[in-house]
Amino acid sequence: MNPNQATWFKNYTLDYLEGLRNANMGVYIGIRFLEVGPDFLKASMPVDHRTTQPFGILHGGASCVLSETLGSVSAWMTIDPEQYRAVGIEINANHIRAVTQGNVIGVCTPLHVGRRTQVWQTDITEEETGKRIAVSRLTVAIIEQGTLSTQKEKVIVSK
Image (tube, rainbow, N blue to C red):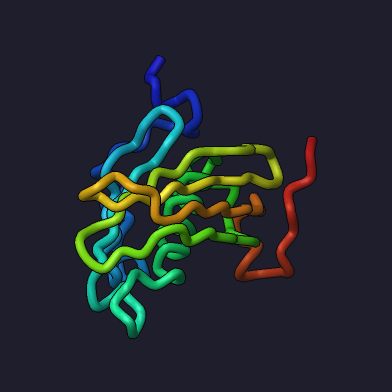
């Protein structure tokens, strides 16, 4: 058995995930997937003019974008994408330390992977020092494919 299949619906590769990158927020701010582990997804994000606030430190919203990107993609990787979608419904973050340059690394792991909801935690560290700069949790709803565009969101009912 492939070790990635312990958590993931199928064997996703970095090349496949990078292929999903197109004209979306993650691309605009420079998020890059780095590693797919058996129960984690890792990405980097630059601390630059796109991701800092007016005083030159990493914007808390950018940390949330990194967390939302990792958590949503991770949740999507656990479901059959032909039948379901994963959509974020709540995010929170604790900003612990300021960063003014370089890159940050996000490592996203599951806290709960259910049929209707999932909770993913992202630990964000400064690449250069390895020091934690933020921790964030994302709650995701698992909905039927097509729900967002055709009808009011309907959470999957347990069978």
